[in-house]
Length: 168
Ligand SMILES: C[S@@+](CC[C@H](N)C(=O)[O-])C[C@H]1O[C@@H](n2cnc3c(N)ncnc32)[C@H](O)[C@@H]1O
Image (cartoon, rainbow, N blue to C red):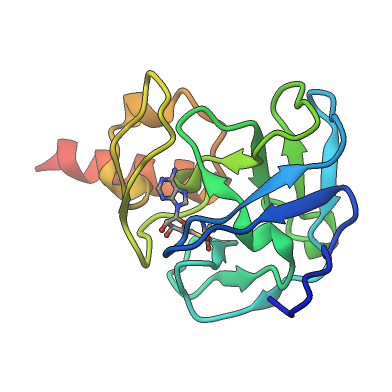
């Protein structure tokens, strides 16, 4: 991030912390469930990294947001979805799953977009139903994923994986 830091979007602020990957994004106003927090207008294609988001079914379908939204952490009880499911990239957006209070950490469920992540980690979301190691949808059971909104390519890849397993 540039120094001094200027938020890329006035309704959000990054809380920076010392140490690897410890920073995160907070809201500066409340959002209602279903409300669109932002349209992801600044996304560009990128090779996969720890900070890219998958936007289609192929391993090379990844984008970089080029904004503070790169600081959205994963949670096993997320408050937003990253909806990149439209074929029209101008429709891509982040949407509230529930009412979000001012000052909340913005979180999404990484396996809802990611099939196989570039960087796995031990989740520290601290929620009751925490899934532990997060490395992409490929490593989760269908029953675990069914509790979440997931991107169409994740539903498709899970269906294919499970059909393949049943065929063996
Ligand atoms: C795109 S970055 C998110 C912003 C990151 N926290 C930072 O400071 O740059 C993704 C990385 O953040 C960390 N991270 C995100 N959510 C996490 C969570 N629930 N528990 C532990 N680490 C997490 C992991 O290292 C992950 O690879």
